[in-house]
Amino acid sequence: METSSSSLSSSITSSVSSSEVYPNIIVARDECETICRPECEWIFNRLRAWPLIKGGTRVEWVLHPHFSDPPPYTFQLQFGRTGNPLADDWTDVGLSVINTYYAIDDTQRVYGKTQWTHYRVLLTTSVATYASKPQNLYGSLPKRQWRIAKEIERMELLRLRKEAGQEGYLLKRRLFGEACSCLDSQTLEIANPQCPLCYGTGFTLGYYDPYPCFYAELGTHGIDNKLDGGQSRGTIDDAPRTWARMINSPQIFSGDVWVDRDTDFRWQIHAIQNIVEVTGLPVIVKAEVRLLPFSHPAYTVIIPNQIPI
Image (cartoon, rainbow, N blue to C red; front, side):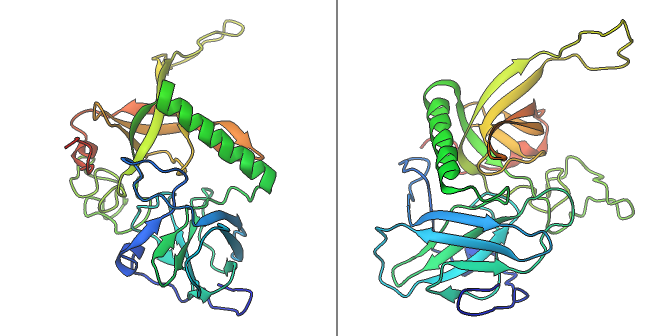
């Protein structure tokens, strides 16, 4: 990691989760909500990232002009594999820096074709430690397009809350970590889909902590079974599919699970389509979801405060 004042080696990386090192982090939120997001902060006005696959990703941050904690300000860049601020895999990148506005991560994080890397910044003052909202690497929007994207998110969230949506929780599936003992030792395939340790994901603990207040608009759509030129369609599935319209924040991946707060139905996400983009940045998506059978181990994942007291 590099800063404007010095060059720091990105090889110095903490293996301890941020929840252990920073037990009193205040996660930055876009909006105040008494029940869902009681810790509402506006400390980070904006976070931007310019990714380079082989390393050298530049991350910049801007604090809100009304932020009044006394200096000095100590910043720590972190990366994670989901956009969930409650995930336990946030890891320090390099050393912390003081009174600066950007850092560079020199390490290559992805080797496949899915850009799952997210960054966030921890700000520590004499008052508290604050965490920025996670930033994905779909590109850095100019200010005007960024404001448009945020307004689209705001209007969509309002529509989902007041009219069309159902409130729930997002369970982000673990893609990395400690391999579960249920994996076949030779093929590394999941030998026990009902495994109580990984919930059939292949990685111990299975899912990250639930992301609260994640809204979805469910709808059923049939399959277009028109034929062209009388050709045989072969063996196909014409069963209607259930789709869910969601805001792509945190970033949604196939295999994640959405939990309906009121019914406790748990829907697994499969195919994902971008339906609203701003300069290539997916803001709103439509995901094919399939209701998990009630025997699925995902129903044993405990969601705190799901039942009102």
